Length: 281
Image (cartoon, rainbow, N blue to C red; front, side, top):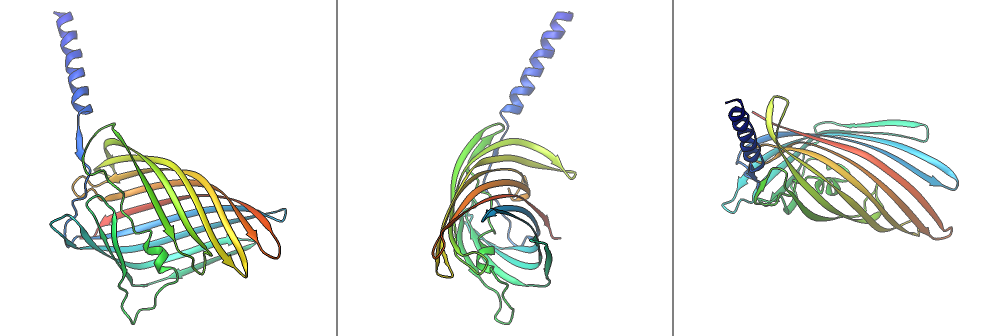
Protein backbone atom coordinates (compact mmCIF):
# COMPACT_ATOMS: atom_id res chain seq x y z
CA UNK A 1 0.00 0.00 0.00
CA UNK A 2 2.84 2.35 0.85
CA UNK A 3 4.53 1.58 -2.48
CA UNK A 4 1.28 2.31 -4.31
CA UNK A 5 0.99 5.64 -2.50
CA UNK A 6 4.54 6.54 -3.47
CA UNK A 7 3.90 5.68 -7.12
CA UNK A 8 0.72 7.76 -7.13
CA UNK A 9 2.60 10.69 -5.61
CA UNK A 10 5.32 10.48 -8.22
CA UNK A 11 2.73 10.21 -11.00
CA UNK A 12 0.90 13.30 -9.75
CA UNK A 13 4.17 15.21 -9.47
CA UNK A 14 5.14 14.32 -13.03
CA UNK A 15 1.67 15.22 -14.28
CA UNK A 16 1.76 18.65 -12.64
CA UNK A 17 5.26 19.30 -13.98
CA UNK A 18 4.16 18.31 -17.47
CA UNK A 19 1.12 20.58 -17.25
CA UNK A 20 3.27 23.55 -16.17
CA UNK A 21 5.77 22.89 -18.96
CA UNK A 22 2.96 22.89 -21.52
CA UNK A 23 1.52 26.25 -20.38
CA UNK A 24 1.60 28.68 -23.29
CA UNK A 25 0.72 32.32 -23.93
CA UNK A 26 -0.29 34.12 -27.11
CA UNK A 27 2.41 36.81 -27.26
CA UNK A 28 0.61 39.43 -29.32
CA UNK A 29 -0.60 42.89 -28.31
CA UNK A 30 -4.25 43.28 -27.43
CA UNK A 31 -4.43 46.99 -26.65
CA UNK A 32 -7.76 48.51 -25.63
CA UNK A 33 -8.93 51.90 -26.99
CA UNK A 34 -9.28 54.85 -24.59
CA UNK A 35 -6.97 53.30 -22.02
CA UNK A 36 -4.64 55.80 -20.34
CA UNK A 37 -1.24 55.10 -18.79
CA UNK A 38 1.63 56.93 -17.10
CA UNK A 39 5.12 55.90 -18.19
CA UNK A 40 8.06 56.66 -15.89
CA UNK A 41 11.57 56.25 -17.29
CA UNK A 42 14.83 56.40 -15.34
CA UNK A 43 18.17 56.11 -17.13
CA UNK A 44 21.65 56.18 -15.61
CA UNK A 45 24.84 56.18 -17.69
CA UNK A 46 28.51 56.12 -16.80
CA UNK A 47 30.97 57.09 -19.53
CA UNK A 48 34.75 56.87 -19.41
CA UNK A 49 36.90 58.10 -22.31
CA UNK A 50 40.63 58.55 -22.78
CA UNK A 51 41.92 61.55 -24.72
CA UNK A 52 45.51 62.68 -25.04
CA UNK A 53 46.57 60.48 -22.14
CA UNK A 54 43.88 61.81 -19.82
CA UNK A 55 40.90 59.82 -18.53
CA UNK A 56 37.60 61.71 -18.48
CA UNK A 57 34.58 60.39 -16.58
CA UNK A 58 30.97 61.48 -16.90
CA UNK A 59 27.77 60.43 -15.15
CA UNK A 60 24.36 61.17 -16.67
CA UNK A 61 20.94 60.61 -15.06
CA UNK A 62 17.71 61.15 -16.98
CA UNK A 63 14.19 60.92 -15.54
CA UNK A 64 10.99 61.38 -17.50
CA UNK A 65 7.24 61.12 -17.12
CA UNK A 66 5.01 60.58 -20.15
CA UNK A 67 1.26 60.09 -20.52
CA UNK A 68 0.10 57.42 -22.97
CA UNK A 69 -3.40 57.24 -24.48
CA UNK A 70 -4.50 54.41 -26.76
CA UNK A 71 -6.59 56.55 -29.12
CA UNK A 72 -7.63 53.93 -31.64
CA UNK A 73 -7.28 50.22 -32.37
CA UNK A 74 -8.02 49.10 -35.93
CA UNK A 75 -9.55 45.75 -36.90
CA UNK A 76 -6.06 44.68 -38.04
CA UNK A 77 -4.83 45.20 -34.48
CA UNK A 78 -2.73 48.24 -35.34
CA UNK A 79 -2.97 50.78 -32.53
CA UNK A 80 -2.54 54.55 -32.53
CA UNK A 81 -0.99 55.84 -29.31
CA UNK A 82 -0.61 59.47 -28.27
CA UNK A 83 2.38 60.20 -26.05
CA UNK A 84 2.42 63.46 -24.10
CA UNK A 85 5.79 64.24 -22.53
CA UNK A 86 4.98 65.85 -19.19
CA UNK A 87 8.15 66.28 -17.13
CA UNK A 88 11.78 65.25 -17.34
CA UNK A 89 15.13 66.12 -15.84
CA UNK A 90 18.75 65.65 -16.89
CA UNK A 91 21.66 65.56 -14.45
CA UNK A 92 25.26 65.45 -15.66
CA UNK A 93 28.45 65.30 -13.67
CA UNK A 94 31.75 65.65 -15.53
CA UNK A 95 35.10 67.46 -15.22
CA UNK A 96 34.27 68.84 -11.78
CA UNK A 97 30.87 70.21 -12.75
CA UNK A 98 27.52 68.85 -11.59
CA UNK A 99 24.45 70.36 -13.27
CA UNK A 100 20.76 69.50 -13.36
CA UNK A 101 18.17 70.74 -15.84
CA UNK A 102 14.47 70.37 -15.01
CA UNK A 103 11.65 70.64 -17.54
CA UNK A 104 8.10 70.87 -16.20
CA UNK A 105 4.79 70.69 -18.08
CA UNK A 106 6.57 70.17 -21.38
CA UNK A 107 3.43 68.94 -23.19
CA UNK A 108 5.24 67.87 -26.34
CA UNK A 109 3.12 65.27 -28.15
CA UNK A 110 4.09 62.36 -30.39
CA UNK A 111 1.68 60.07 -32.23
CA UNK A 112 2.89 56.50 -32.77
CA UNK A 113 1.24 53.66 -34.67
CA UNK A 114 2.31 50.14 -33.66
CA UNK A 115 1.44 46.73 -35.08
CA UNK A 116 0.11 43.80 -33.02
CA UNK A 117 3.72 42.57 -32.84
CA UNK A 118 4.96 45.92 -31.49
CA UNK A 119 6.65 47.17 -34.65
CA UNK A 120 6.65 50.93 -35.12
CA UNK A 121 4.66 51.68 -38.30
CA UNK A 122 4.57 55.49 -38.10
CA UNK A 123 5.79 58.30 -35.85
CA UNK A 124 4.64 61.92 -36.05
CA UNK A 125 5.30 65.00 -33.95
CA UNK A 126 1.85 66.45 -33.16
CA UNK A 127 2.90 69.09 -30.65
CA UNK A 128 0.55 72.10 -30.74
CA UNK A 129 1.99 75.19 -32.54
CA UNK A 130 1.91 77.36 -29.41
CA UNK A 131 3.93 74.84 -27.34
CA UNK A 132 7.72 75.13 -27.30
CA UNK A 133 9.43 71.99 -28.54
CA UNK A 134 12.14 70.52 -26.37
CA UNK A 135 15.60 69.90 -27.89
CA UNK A 136 16.02 66.40 -29.30
CA UNK A 137 12.30 65.66 -29.67
CA UNK A 138 13.02 63.64 -32.84
CA UNK A 139 15.59 61.46 -31.06
CA UNK A 140 13.29 61.07 -28.06
CA UNK A 141 10.47 59.80 -30.26
CA UNK A 142 12.66 56.91 -31.39
CA UNK A 143 12.76 55.64 -27.80
CA UNK A 144 8.96 55.33 -27.62
CA UNK A 145 9.05 51.68 -28.57
CA UNK A 146 7.14 48.54 -27.75
CA UNK A 147 8.79 45.23 -27.10
CA UNK A 148 8.76 43.09 -30.25
CA UNK A 149 6.57 40.00 -29.74
CA UNK A 150 6.52 36.83 -31.91
CA UNK A 151 2.75 36.89 -32.51
CA UNK A 152 2.22 33.22 -31.69
CA UNK A 153 1.66 30.83 -28.80
CA UNK A 154 4.88 30.43 -26.83
CA UNK A 155 5.36 27.77 -24.18
CA UNK A 156 7.00 28.42 -20.83
CA UNK A 157 10.74 27.92 -21.21
CA UNK A 158 10.65 28.43 -24.98
CA UNK A 159 13.11 30.80 -26.67
CA UNK A 160 12.99 32.88 -29.87
CA UNK A 161 15.20 35.41 -31.66
CA UNK A 162 14.84 38.76 -33.39
CA UNK A 163 17.20 41.25 -35.04
CA UNK A 164 16.59 44.97 -34.50
CA UNK A 165 18.30 47.75 -36.47
CA UNK A 166 17.86 51.41 -35.51
CA UNK A 167 19.27 54.69 -36.78
CA UNK A 168 19.64 58.04 -35.02
CA UNK A 169 20.12 61.27 -36.94
CA UNK A 170 22.74 63.89 -35.94
CA UNK A 171 21.61 66.56 -33.49
CA UNK A 172 22.99 69.34 -31.31
CA UNK A 173 24.11 66.82 -28.69
CA UNK A 174 25.08 64.07 -31.13
CA UNK A 175 27.24 64.81 -34.20
CA UNK A 176 26.94 61.24 -35.54
CA UNK A 177 24.54 59.47 -37.83
CA UNK A 178 24.35 56.32 -35.72
CA UNK A 179 23.28 52.83 -36.70
CA UNK A 180 22.84 50.15 -34.06
CA UNK A 181 22.11 46.46 -34.46
CA UNK A 182 20.90 44.09 -31.77
CA UNK A 183 20.55 40.33 -32.12
CA UNK A 184 18.05 39.64 -29.36
CA UNK A 185 17.43 36.28 -27.69
CA UNK A 186 14.17 36.02 -25.73
CA UNK A 187 13.03 33.45 -23.20
CA UNK A 188 9.53 33.09 -21.73
CA UNK A 189 9.90 32.43 -18.00
CA UNK A 190 6.17 32.23 -17.22
CA UNK A 191 3.87 33.90 -14.74
CA UNK A 192 5.41 35.69 -11.79
CA UNK A 193 4.06 37.99 -9.08
CA UNK A 194 5.35 41.56 -8.85
CA UNK A 195 3.95 44.33 -6.66
CA UNK A 196 0.99 42.09 -5.77
CA UNK A 197 -0.03 41.31 -9.36
CA UNK A 198 0.61 38.41 -11.74
CA UNK A 199 2.61 39.21 -14.88
CA UNK A 200 4.20 37.30 -17.73
CA UNK A 201 7.96 37.44 -17.30
CA UNK A 202 10.36 37.52 -20.26
CA UNK A 203 14.16 37.58 -20.22
CA UNK A 204 16.18 38.94 -23.14
CA UNK A 205 19.84 39.44 -23.95
CA UNK A 206 22.19 39.84 -26.86
CA UNK A 207 25.11 41.62 -28.49
CA UNK A 208 25.05 45.25 -29.64
CA UNK A 209 26.92 46.60 -32.65
CA UNK A 210 27.19 50.39 -33.16
CA UNK A 211 28.66 52.41 -36.02
CA UNK A 212 28.46 56.06 -36.96
CA UNK A 213 29.84 58.86 -39.10
CA UNK A 214 29.79 62.60 -38.50
CA UNK A 215 31.46 65.94 -38.94
CA UNK A 216 32.23 68.67 -36.42
CA UNK A 217 34.31 71.85 -36.77
CA UNK A 218 35.62 70.67 -40.14
CA UNK A 219 36.79 67.32 -38.82
CA UNK A 220 35.51 63.94 -39.96
CA UNK A 221 34.60 61.49 -37.22
CA UNK A 222 33.89 57.77 -37.24
CA UNK A 223 32.57 55.62 -34.42
CA UNK A 224 32.73 51.85 -34.03
CA UNK A 225 31.68 49.86 -31.01
CA UNK A 226 30.26 46.67 -29.60
CA UNK A 227 28.74 45.51 -26.36
CA UNK A 228 25.91 43.52 -24.85
CA UNK A 229 22.69 43.96 -22.90
CA UNK A 230 20.42 42.00 -20.59
CA UNK A 231 16.80 42.76 -19.76
CA UNK A 232 13.87 41.54 -17.72
CA UNK A 233 10.33 42.49 -18.76
CA UNK A 234 6.94 41.97 -17.11
CA UNK A 235 3.94 41.92 -19.46
CA UNK A 236 0.31 42.53 -18.54
CA UNK A 237 -1.44 39.19 -19.10
CA UNK A 238 -4.41 40.80 -20.91
CA UNK A 239 -2.92 43.52 -23.14
CA UNK A 240 0.67 42.17 -23.26
CA UNK A 241 1.91 45.70 -22.60
CA UNK A 242 5.30 45.83 -20.85
CA UNK A 243 4.35 47.28 -17.47
CA UNK A 244 7.90 47.05 -16.10
CA UNK A 245 11.27 46.57 -17.75
CA UNK A 246 14.85 46.83 -16.58
CA UNK A 247 17.73 46.91 -19.08
CA UNK A 248 21.46 46.92 -18.32
CA UNK A 249 23.98 47.47 -21.09
CA UNK A 250 27.66 48.01 -21.71
CA UNK A 251 29.55 49.24 -24.78
CA UNK A 252 33.21 49.60 -25.71
CA UNK A 253 33.62 52.15 -28.51
CA UNK A 254 36.33 53.94 -30.44
CA UNK A 255 35.99 57.41 -32.02
CA UNK A 256 38.43 58.18 -34.83
CA UNK A 257 38.94 61.85 -35.77
CA UNK A 258 40.51 62.95 -39.05
CA UNK A 259 41.39 66.63 -39.51
CA UNK A 260 44.09 69.09 -38.57
CA UNK A 261 44.99 66.70 -35.78
CA UNK A 262 44.23 63.00 -36.12
CA UNK A 263 43.37 61.11 -32.96
CA UNK A 264 41.66 58.00 -31.64
CA UNK A 265 39.48 58.16 -28.53
CA UNK A 266 38.54 54.91 -26.75
CA UNK A 267 35.33 55.09 -24.72
CA UNK A 268 33.42 52.78 -22.38
CA UNK A 269 29.72 53.24 -21.68
CA UNK A 270 27.66 51.40 -19.05
CA UNK A 271 24.05 52.09 -18.13
CA UNK A 272 20.71 50.96 -16.84
CA UNK A 273 17.20 51.95 -17.91
CA UNK A 274 14.06 51.23 -15.90
CA UNK A 275 10.61 51.77 -17.41
CA UNK A 276 7.48 51.52 -15.27
CA UNK A 277 3.96 51.88 -16.66
CA UNK A 278 0.81 52.24 -14.55
CA UNK A 279 -2.75 52.46 -15.77
CA UNK A 280 -4.38 55.83 -15.20
CA UNK A 281 -7.90 55.37 -13.82
